[in-house]
Amino acid sequence: MTNLDRPDDQTRPLFAYGLLKPGEMAFALVNPFSVRKEPAKVPGTLRLRHGIPLRAPDTSGLPVCGLLWFQPARIAI
Image (cartoon, rainbow, N blue to C red; front, top):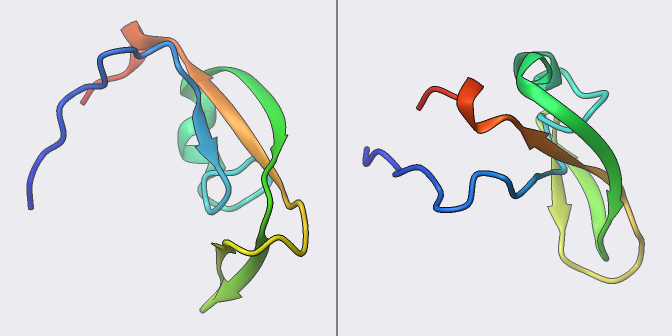
């Protein structure tokens, strides 16, 4: 597995539509590091596969997702 480098602009938000989205089970892992949360919508439909939410890229809906901002100094990669 290859390690990813840090993004050049760490002030940009993470678009969370699956397990990291506010209200989902893995959100608790990233919430202590987030400094701002905001709802977001994109065209598509959220579907579940084995209990994991996945986005299907159609235009039949606008699922509510989340934008998460982090304080770069608190993130250890």
